[in-house]
Length: 303
Image 1 (cartoon, rainbow, N blue to C red):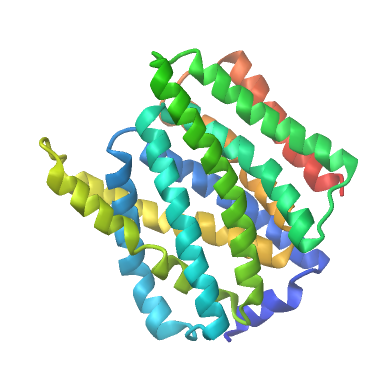
Image 2 (cartoon, helix red, strand yellow; image 1 turned 90 degrees about the horizontal axis):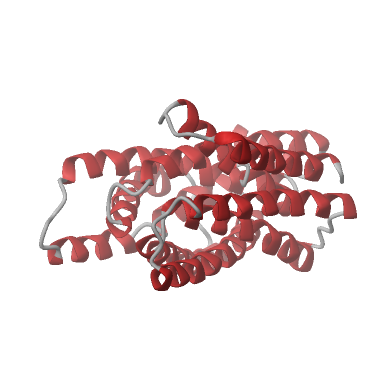
């Protein structure tokens, strides 16, 4: 294990580790907002995810195979489980994005995830939130879900597609909690956290490039692959920061708190849309974003 890995293991569960976990979770939230902006409705969601995973394979392979230690047998079985869980999540999200608008699906998924994750962390890791922290979770998740309702008012609605999209989005939120809890367990079982990270990104990225290639071949009107591949490249880099950051945060401190802080990504996403993409925010969205941020502050300070 390298010096950085040893340092991270040493500070796990300490006040220093908790502070660093907070920083990692917030950086992860910002990166996830950028990741979301890259995916925002320009390409078929199956192709987008396939391009991202293809680049994750290319970028992660040399690190996994030649830089970090190889996983032991126990870690190998944990990684097999991660492949199944994340494949289910990615399929669910692609199905949700096919049927309902990104601005509706994304907040539903991100608003549902923290509630289930906090409950799962309590059950599996013995991490119990105080009443004050639960108030913070209610503010954050409630604010995010109300953002979905607000965004829904601006969409041209196909009710049948919307219902299916929301069902898949709720399933996606549940699977966010499942993979957050499962991956937190996985990285905590690894003597070297970077071994788990590198191999995780490597082995969970094989599936969607295959599915995307099959889908692309069946398309009558095929999109230009050049811009899609660039989008996938940047998405893969951001995925390392976003998902790697929150995974490391769950290794250093409480799983539930890291999961809640990461969902401030909706606030960062709104600011990116406001200041960079020129989207209108308005007083209602601003109020809901404030509620989300307030919820995260309550969770972080109310323990």
